[in-house]
Length: 271
Image (cartoon, rainbow, N blue to C red; front, side, top):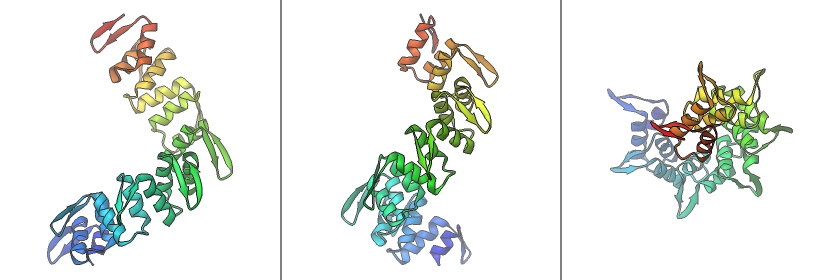
């Protein structure tokens, strides 16, 4: 069928090549109520069906009109910001809740529900922190969930409590180039990553080696007296001016630059 050909990535029919998107469109020409085809078209950015253009959001809405129990379509509609289904309006949180109602083990829906502050799933309230812990329970390698759990002060996962430092180090064990996790590990005073101890300063250095545009990391490195990033030594003044070059309205960086006698920012000398 056209749908199955689309799932397989598209292919040739009667000597003509059809992309996966074109296959789903063909499937919908034959059956406009084909919920799975609508969902797959939505994940590909939408498309034109029977002369009408449908956005991704509209495809997911069409999918839910055909199958209101599809957890994927509810999740995807939430990612798109929510929308109207069968005459009822659902914001993104409501979409994630509907998704979890139909699939209690939908890891990404738990994570996204945490991002929007948590909510009530099947009669039980879950805070944002509990949502991230639930996502980690389902997928212990969910690096962003570990980071978010750290931002929320840490928490219990499968009977074990992880403080914020432990959450950031776990995130970095999974992704050693996670700049924000390095920065936040620095804020927490540093810690051990894969058997190696990183001081607060070294964490800011690592954050900047991964993301040289991390303005707060430059500022904090300056507060600690400066340091070497990618083999080049930066003084405290240079750290503060780097931070201000990236974020000219950073009040803390301006104050810190003033405390060390001023410096040149964007070609102008400030005393």
